[in-house]
Length: 330
Image 1 (tube, helix red, strand yellow):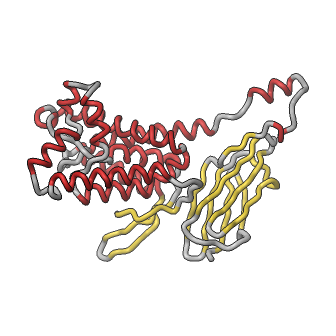
Image 2 (cartoon, rainbow, N blue to C red; image 1 turned 135 degrees about the vertical axis):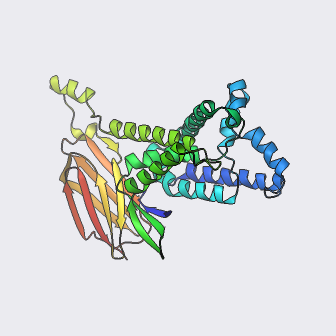
Image 3 (cartoon, rainbow, N blue to C red; image 1 turned 180 degrees about the horizontal axis):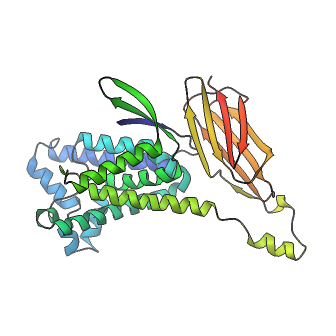
């Protein structure tokens, strides 16, 4: 199964994701120049030993050179297929995670996922011993595994358009939770039965599990209700009008389903008053505005679609905190 793209709208430009992809390709270009496109084995070994994550070197100097090697190894790759595969996954899944966490937090968390993935690989190498402590680990896949783990929790119903190879080649749309669980099971199977082949599967597992934890934490934080000031003032009989202390927030979740005829959006906005939902469409962008029943929270968001749609929406329905919008494709 080869992923092509996801049908998941976002509300912002993923500048950090673009930057990460650009840095990875820039470093790869440097590798190609230094190693003669990986034909000079001595040069390849030298740069991987110097800038890759070598467990034994980390144990010798965890604060200095060891910690620097974790960062540098996250932007190095061992060949053209290695970097193309990693960057495809980062391109497909990273933009929506950045959209939810925000640019700065996404960068910090991405690097943290890479750190945890390196520590998971270190634990495996220490358990295995021998040459495993001396083999350099390179690649962005540990950090990207964290992206996949968070995506699983935050956008489980998003559709992944996937290229399938059976007796013929075709494409199909697979729910993210199905695709990513299958991906994770493959990592577990490969790690458990020693299907290494130079791939740091335990780094993938460590990054993915950490990403799942971050995704679960993000969803839990969104469920925390606003309390304090209003309740105190209400008891004093001095509660302000809702519009005076209205908090503007983004919808908790937005996912898209695309068919040849229409686009359907699912927008999660709990406790909204249905009469106060406004949806407008401009070209390929859908703007959503809604107010909660108590009037103290306003949801505002926009979904940037991959295709143009007609206005007005063909169908809208709000039930159990989920607004469903169907739009005819232009």
